[in-house]
Structure formats: C-alpha cells, structure tokens
Amino acid sequence: MNNPALSLKQSFVLHFLAEAFQNPDALWEKRFVSLYGDALKDGIELPAFDIENLREEHFRLFGSAPTCPMELTLHLAENPFEQARMMAHMAGFYRAFGLEHGEGERSDNLSVALSFLSFLTLKEQNAADRHMDEAKEITSKAITDFAREFLSPGVAAFTGKLANLTSNAFYLALAEILRREIFAIQEPPAEIVSNWEPRSSELDEGEISCGNLNIPLQS
Image 1 (spheres, rainbow, N blue to C red):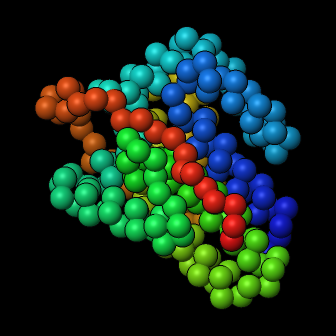
Image 2: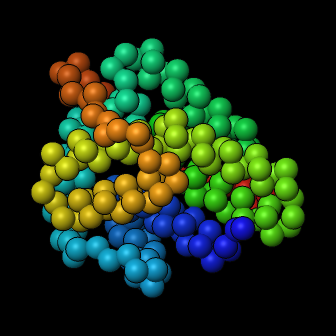
C-alpha cells in the first residue's frame, strides 16, 4: 500500500539531490538555502561549505573538462554509439510521460534523471490517491525500469568515481545520500566501475549545462 507521506518525502529528496549537484552560482545558493531548510526537517544534514571553494570544486569535477562528469552514460559505456543509444532510451522514457529535457541538456544528466524520477514518484502517488490502478501500475513499472537500467548502475559508477577524485565533504555526503535513495529503489547486483577516463580530445568541448525537467502538473 502506498504511503503518501513517504512518497512525498522520496520525491522531495530526489528533487533536492537534483538541485544540490548543480552549478553553485549565486542563484543556486538562494535556491539551495530554501530547499535545505526543508531537507533538514527530513533528517538530511550536509557538511558546512565555503561557497567559493565549492564553486571551484564543482568546476573541477563537473565543469568543461570534467574529472567526473554528471552525464551517466559516460560512466556506463566507453563506446560513443552505445552512449547515444542509452541516451535515446532515456529520452524515450521522458517523452512517454510528456516531458522533454531542456535545450542544451543531455538526457543522461544526473540532475535531469533525478528530476524525472522525482516527478514519477509524485505521479505514482497521485494515481494511487485517485484509484487509477492502470496509471499507477504503468508509473510504478517505469520507476523500476528506469532505476534498474540507468540510474542505479549510473549512480553506482558515478559515486564510485567521485569518491576517488574528491575529498570535498559536501559532495561526498551528497554521494552517500544519492546512493541510499537510488539503491532503495533498485540496487545493482554488483558494484559497477566507471568507464570514464578524460581524453584530451574532450577538453575543448563546451561545458554541458545541467538542470531540471519542465514538469507538467497534471497526472
């Protein structure tokens, strides 16, 4: 049986994580302060951080020449054609629920994927509240399939790579919360190692922006 309070909490935590991993510019700082107040009420506590140091570390890890990109398929596959196939599959999930990732964003971006899962969690609970059994079943299956195929292995690879590349307490704590939330939905059968290794040919590519999906309100 669905628990509305737990569903709302899970959806919020996924949304919070999607925001927390984004570029910590001035607008992010304002949004994050507001969200973090609610996160504390849900028992999520993060280490204090210096915003300038956080910006430098975010750029080093996730910026234009990333040591640990937030594009999950880069961790999951070495072959660019396989990466493209996986991205198309993820975009297909979004379109099936009437969503599109923003212009300039990749469908495999961590924040985009987390926003999608947050939306599906709310959609599933809404269907349960309205006794829409078929819609609930379809959404529940999408949550499981999306987590199993992309987010669970992607998060395992991404967070494992991140742990080896940073000593930043803020991002390490976020990674632990991320693993806990995603693995509670679908835990990978074995630890997955990231395939990502920076290559010189990629250093001149522009920074890939990340952000959240534009989410319709209707179920």
